[in-house]
Length: 261
Image (cartoon, rainbow, N blue to C red):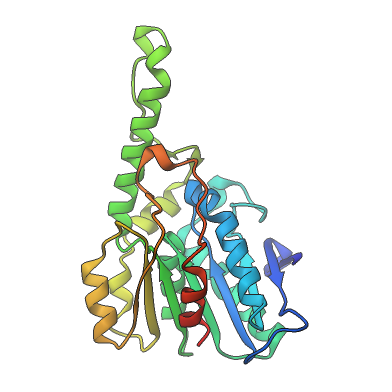
């Protein structure tokens, strides 16, 4: 893995996983659009493992952090939904320039799936996108995270003096991460299905145990895409699981079979 900075004024942090020297198979390029907030933390190691596994299959893999997140420059309150989409386009361009491969495949994780679809919607090139437990409706997602934040703060405050027995809601904090209005407003208006009618991208979806997305599944299968039933359980909206790191011991190869084909 090669850590570096790229983009305008080298403000974006990237982790490049070059193909293994002894890798077999066709040379490909894969961009991993990670989630945000606590889901970024939960899936970080799984995304690293996916990148390493793909590199062993002769893929050039790029993981990166959106502006104001992770190791990229900018503070959380500087971030915006539109800029995250622009960051993703910069990452696609970096992979194309570095590898001389025009077809960049994308793995989008949770909110990263929404960002990947939005970034591809403004591109004339056809892409293969694999959505891993995608957020299909930004407004619903924000409500779910707000519910989790409320539950967590209520639990944390239960041992404080009675006057402090309250749960936080309605602020800009979501489970320890502060998302400014330009992020919240953009995410609240984003729906994955909205990017489907005008695109000819190859969409596939991988759903962990318990995840449901009937409208998305119908759209994907109607377009000839595939639905992968993962063996693992992620429990993204279960407050009790927020500190549990996820892994893909059984589904990683199947997912890469789809996105790298």
